[in-house]
Length: 389
Image (cartoon, rainbow, N blue to C red; front, side, top):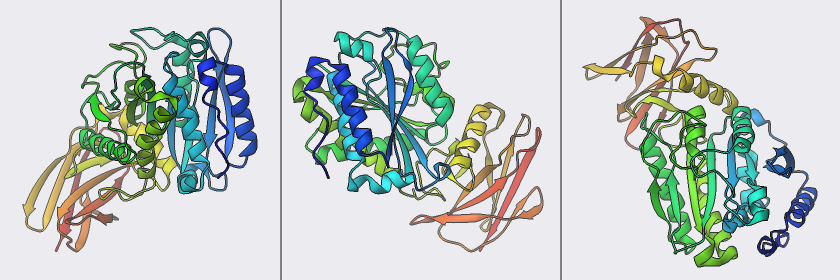
């Protein structure tokens, strides 16, 4: 791989023009896999740029989408350094599989006015108008599977991964904790001791009511059911170079997870598809590719209060019955009902409202997951019966 083209020492001089030129040159040198998108202007008229990194040889519909926001607070130099270090790594051979299977959208200078001023330069208790405009546009346009909000401390020696989902639903607590543990382990292997921190569980109206604007995670989680993580590196204790490397060490395992198939998922990709229920019985998004699964996820998530929690009963040792209700209007995409069955039985048949229907399965070490795609009917009761031997 070529020598790192980014001179992070320029961050100390707060020379945005020089850094933007470095970004332009970087994209020019890797034009086959990178592209600059201009998101809009800051309050003081500076451009806010996003760098897209992906393998253009594979359709976007087949890819997971990750958005990484760096440096929403202008005085947090380590966050800007993480964005540049991440871009450099994403064009490497090591990241080639990630580029093939994912679209990575990096906003390396989310607060250009604050960066130039050397100030926090953001509201203490709410999301800024500019952030509402460009981050909301990114979220609405790309419906990301993952969002990471990168910050950096200028005091102490703390570094932390923040579990950013803000209320309990489905298996989000377990899944978020599992991924956070992988991030912490990856940082540990690089020599960087991160801790796990939580924002606390609270359900808030997006883009308006926030206790503190330190993380944009809750808005993206509320809108998209994205997997959301805050990141605090530390430019005070580590300096810029190590702060950048520590951030990369923590982010890299999460991005690699997006290429894997988790044991409870039929498809590979980020495990954000369980909307209601649990690993035993759940309502999930479905679709033939990543794009369809995003649309399905968004529709179910927006209408989640209209789905009742699924109920499950073991009729006998070889029959499971599931009931649920939906109180809304028809949706454009189906949803999946998934039931986990002990061991690895032979699934003989699945009946939906008494009619035999198609199903598909995946397995982990000790159980079988049975999936059935269900069309969302108008204000319907659903009954699913699974027979196995």
